[in-house]
Image (cartoon, rainbow, N blue to C red):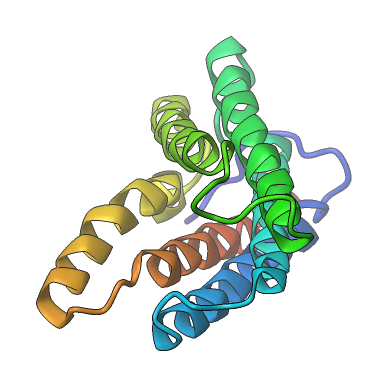
Length: 186
């Protein structure tokens, strides 16, 4: 029997946020497949899909916070804040690339935002496991993002196809599903 994780203001408000995170992940998966098929030569305007992904991730982080899955204390809130800041920078970076302010290679925000998202999700994962407020497998779902990196590297080494972006998209689709599928309190 699954238990709820505590009071949720407005039962079911987390579901649209989980759906947005899943949609953002699937958009990033699509972007990654286009990027891999084109050999990295995609028009900068396609970075709008990266912005949609980052905004979906922000929705997912809000959903995790709304559910209290990372805990209600300072550690969980700080973890969510670090991750949210990194995803906001990623969204800004994608939009600046899309409008041609700079390219992916010249972006001063690209590496910082991507490393920040990785570090932020490690922190969210640790806070979520420590809080023990999310039922079952869901409590481990934030670790899908940090695990996507080595899986993608192994896949790329085996196939010769750069596939980090699609695996990150799949990770966020899983995290979004974890949020969406969390039972609302009755």
